[in-house]
Image 1 (tube, rainbow, N blue to C red):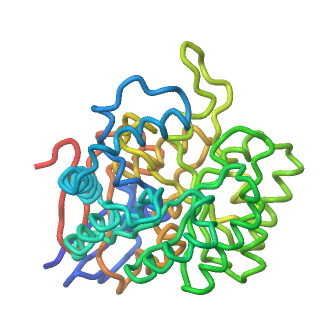
Image 2: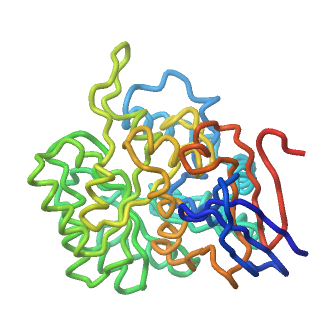
Length: 390
């Protein structure tokens, strides 16, 4: 099958592009104004398929992060195999229809035994293997994973069943000791690591610093991803500059989650928020840190709306962080894939024809309207979504 695409904005240049036999056969300069922008199929580095689509049965949720945690824990009585499968399947279907090629989902691991969701998501991964890559992260409280008796058992199961090791870190007692045990488990089993860290507005929350230091100590550059780091938005400037430089040198990446962080941070009933809790994206990247963007929570107590759509995540991040969208495409595609240990997608001659086009002369124009038409090309096959779609 052959597809000819005309007047496409590729990295700021207008080109024509030809797809043949599932690969990009030609890219040639073109005159005039582009009609669409092009990017590799998006990659989602941070979602929660086990929690998703539960908001309809969660009432009277207390404000803030810990209110959301409490509501989710109460909802877990509904988490049967059928319930988990139905909701996670819905999330994967939405992600695929919006063009995602891969996603990493965190799975709550708050017990000594294996959570049911871990097995359910593994089954879905096998079922979706030809359509969408699904990575699982065991998201355990640091106090549990850092326990010398319990942590090794969790790590052994994660290693045996294929997954990433992760923990929720927030001002834990004896944090450094517990976190080092996690790094030792990673060294033992050759894990990638992925942490929820400092998801709050306390200036004393410095778990990110501890992760950075241990990444250096254990030589894990490029294998550690953190999410949130909200406290970087309120800590003293000199302190933040120091840890950003250290993170860049250590090779620690950070995912910023605009929907959930904007929704939960500085949240109180009947009062508008003053502090938004977003880590300083531009400053981090200027320091040399790889910054990714993730959807995080979709229709659950942590964020009651949302969708599995990396373009919508980019749109919100650009507004909230004053980002130039053309400079941040890698945060939802190439860079996200690299950090997740996947082959980095590319738009180049000979590369697989796996990409997305969005109607618009440039990225500002393309993100102007959520209903802009998209064409999703997978293995050279075409799908159209959005306005005027057939």
